[in-house]
Length: 92
Image (spheres, rainbow, N blue to C red):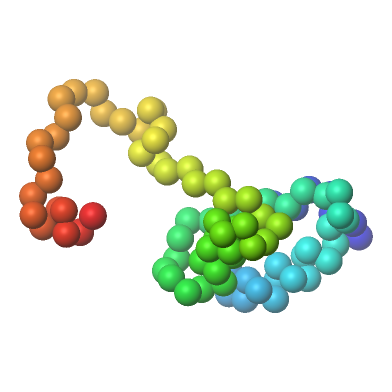
């Protein structure tokens, strides 16, 4: 079976992402489209490696980051909060 548009969602949470993605990519022709997306799930896992390689231009993937707080619908009206505390700064 040929897959022309492949969407792989939440790859960082798949049990065996490297093996599954390798098998899926075999079904996508050179002119097909592949989207691999996920919320993060730590450092050093397969998805993190894919993301890091894409950011360095070392793979056929292009990195896009969509942060939830950039979406205006997820914001509350009102005055902005004050300065961050020392603890908040260290956590950031």
